[in-house]
Length: 338
Image 1 (cartoon, rainbow, N blue to C red):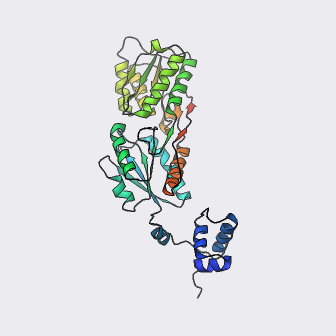
Image 2 (cartoon, rainbow, N blue to C red):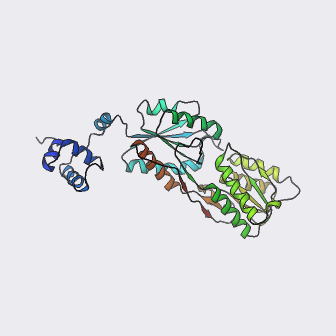
Image 3 (cartoon, one colour):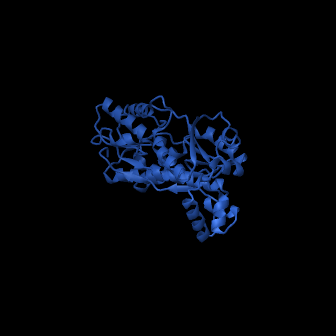
């Protein structure tokens, strides 16, 4: 009967110690490349498989990443922003490529995330997606930092309580999409979406929008900022208030695609035509934006790259490596609504 190969067999054939075999099979940079390749080739020939559970026990690691999704207002019962759903596939693939399991958990701000996941060894680190009201969420970030939890988050950089954030250049996106509308001859603008510290990404988009108007000497024709959380219903209600004004805008910049779909619905209620009467643009490039009537001009955030960066940076943190915030460029997607 053929016995199962062990790390001792590999060490004997490679002429190295068992500890060197262990490091080589985990791709440790403490082993030179030539030795790593030789050890890995011998392991492959012997059909040797690393006992993942035993290895994790020695390291006090779970080889699991916890993805925490947070309750956000939505137009359905999911309570999940559809933008984050598009990022989930990329995160799953990146975890698989790194030989990590992914634990997806729906969370709220009352839970003790550190105790539930890292202290209990359910996960080696956390990825945070979504947050509701950022001012409440920021207190949880402070707690995670104090507990020295390994975590990364999607969102705006916060110099006071940084954690590690991976995000998109929202200011650039707001500026870019506004300049696009100005190039189409639009002059009277309104912004639909929150623009305060409770929603820092929306605020950055609003600031970019306003600076583009200022650059082109159109600030005096700005018709106002109308509050809306990121749902379709909020966009509809805010636009309905805007359309009660005596003077209509000829362009509306929305802080999200869902808000923009609500604005388009409010326009149909008032028998206004897009883009002939009013051009409308969104932000995020969620799948539905290509199928609205008319198809929505928007700003794309690279969710594939975002997922890969979130996982890669979290693994660096887990391994004690230095990481820093990363800001991705936004991309204008022009469709029929502008």
